[in-house]
Image (cartoon, rainbow, N blue to C red; front, side):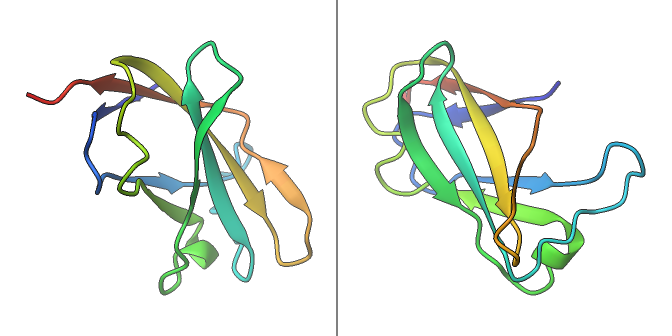
Length: 110
């Protein structure tokens, strides 16, 4: 599984996730809905940030969610390992959580 790398204090990293069905490989269409990623230190239950994907063009229809870290999301965090969980909310209001957790490694800035 991929580990995404981040640098403490950065205010513009983006993570792109393409959400597909495991059984068919087809993109999950959640147009009209939303996607969010909850971010926390690995081994902790305390959320650090909740990132909402921006619905740009046909991204959601094609199963694409782009999550952007904002100004303060990575400030003051210790170097180490973090994880993110993606949750989709469909137009109908039904929710689906992606089973696989995303892995992150954060290092300090120079």
